[in-house]
Image 1: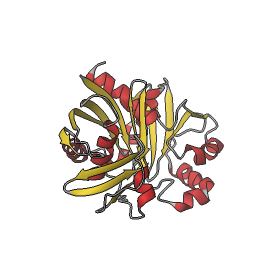
Image 2 (image 1 turned 90 degrees about the vertical axis):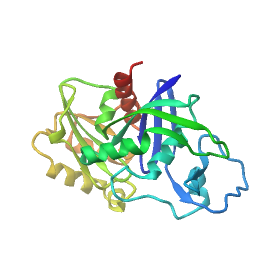
Image 3 (image 1 turned 45 degrees about the horizontal axis):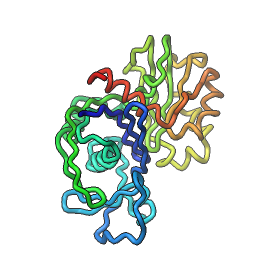
Length: 268
């Protein structure tokens, strides 16, 4: 049997959705040569991974056991950390075969990025996790843009603009009659985790975004706010866009939207 997955593998959290089943774990990763753990591993949260003859702690285990976390500052997802976090997430689902849709920042949606990311993810992977060598086969990989995917969790007609406040990027997106408008969408290379200035002065960050956006982003347009940073930014977005709204599940809506796209692409 093949399971269809929507996968939001972020720099801070990894979230996967399949139907009503959801999984989330910290995306923290550290190298570790001594794999002796003096406490029990928490199911779905702690991962001891063997990858390319190197041991890694992943998830909450990485947060507890070390300070030298691997977190590349560029916006690309073409890196082994993306694969490791995805496999750790898929290990929590019953099946071994998957068809999946992932996302990449709006600014990275070019053919070479998509082709390389698909090559990294697609195929059979045998990556021992917590001492067990489960085989995971990813049959198909689709790629969509970050931010905009959350729209499909609860789509609306007309014009919908929005902001996806992530840990290392902020994606700005624009939909018209349920069509994504690429030319009016963009990625800002600052997020809640990699820019301390945002946490210190979120109002100034929002004003900076507002001042740079085109006239298409009208204050009275419906404005969807997504991402883990919604807790910090929503009230400030609403100052400039009074019709700003949160979805029912802003933390998971990107993964949910990716699942909707995956289901449409691969069937139910």
